[in-house]
Length: 81
Image (cartoon, rainbow, N blue to C red; front, side, top):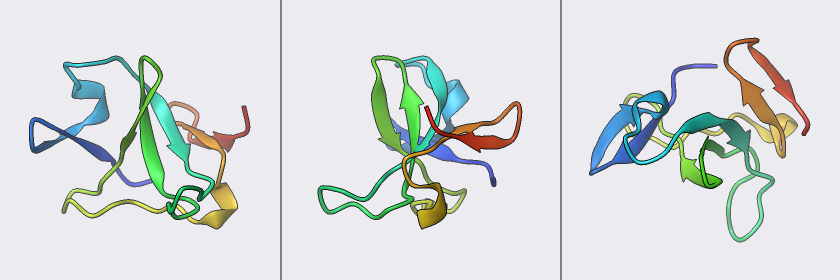
């Protein structure tokens, strides 16, 4: 997966650099409440889902095949919780 960013204080930063909460991983939305299936969210402590963006500030969609799954950066795998 390409590097993902979140918006904090109006700027794009790596989710790992968030000063507000601890970064826990990524989650691909299942597409409810008007969202698109596969839209990527960073999971921060709380838990809080924060929209993930690419380097250019565009929302990342990882595809419907990953909807409802989490991503582990260390192992480079998608999995169901």
